[in-house]
Image 1 (spheres, one colour):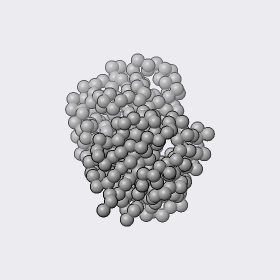
Image 2 (cartoon, helix red, strand yellow; image 1 turned 45 degrees about the vertical axis):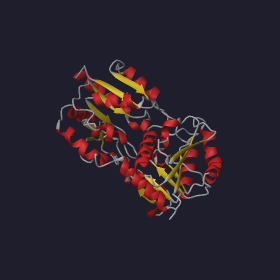
Image 3 (cartoon, rainbow, N blue to C red; image 1 turned 45 degrees about the horizontal axis):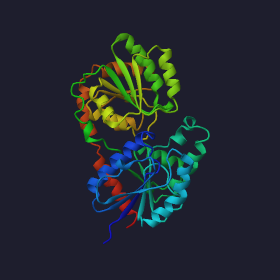
Image 4 (cartoon, rainbow, N blue to C red; image 1 turned 30 degrees about the horizontal axis):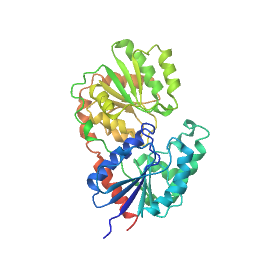
Length: 363
């Protein structure tokens, strides 16, 4: 019997430029390579992707497309016109779209991942010229797909709230956490609070910076490291850091390679993820796996991801965040709770569940 041929629409992937969805795709593909030997995979990539996205397995091949992801208009046009032709040419049985959008006219069934519904929940965080495209393309992808994958129950609830879809059309498949994070932080010998986050407004980094400035008066040797892709809020955030006189105590790294990120987790004293809106919240899992005392906002789905193994705070209250940071710097028990909770999530489980959904569309 001919093996199922799965197409992977990786046209959106701009290395170092799309945040957590890059980690999601890279981690998921590697796990698929481990448990998907019965399938054939064709990765449709752009000119910036690079060869390291495709797992080194005989059942994976790469089909580089003649577009640059940095040119968003060209990428979208090719996704809607060229990709369906390429899918037919490669005899794709089902197309997996891990980055929100998909071709609206496709010769095979589509399964599309929705990581969040921010464009509906918080349209104020989008540039005015981007928002119409988000609304049109995501609505089209949701209606067109045979099945959607939501990365949390909170995202699934949002999709059902905003789009006229039956509940059966949406599967919940959570993210995993890479094995390399476990056991990273036995000593916690660093002098800094770590936050891994894209610098976007909804990440609530202003509040973290302000509360760190107060905490720094109590502990002058303490530093804050903000690691992640520079986003729409970078200039405002850096201006706030300067205004508070915190340039020497707060480091903004921008996007950094994976080994450098792991090193930051390895030496951090504690971890804070103050975001007020997420589709999942992968850095929370990473920090808990690393054994770091972890602080996150008391909002779904972060509260569910934490599962009682992190210190929650009310993002509407500065004092709540400040108290949570103080507790994280002294609470030894919370460190022991993190790794067992993080063990409940794995990329292998995510890959197996995703492959099952893909296979079901062609039975």
